[in-house]
Length: 92
Image 1 (spheres, rainbow, N blue to C red):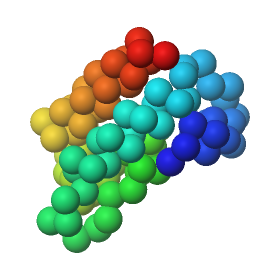
Image 2 (image 1 turned 180 degrees about the horizontal axis):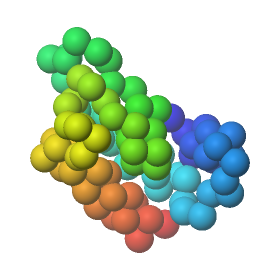
Image 3 (image 1 turned 45 degrees about the vertical axis):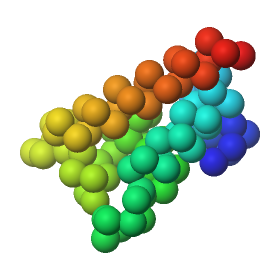
């Protein structure tokens, strides 16, 4: 997923992106490699990770939510994405 695609998606939600979409793209593309190792029934996509991060949409294959709350897996994915994002952002 490119920075332009992320920017377009955020705008389609009615918001103006306030963060570095290129850094977010790098973080998501990095993370997708570690969560989608082929062991899940449902392919985890970059868009699903973006939706988890900015819309809090569950990813059932990764068990990110239970009864509407983040699971340990969900918190780990979100925190790792944020950490990767801030790492890429500081390099720009």
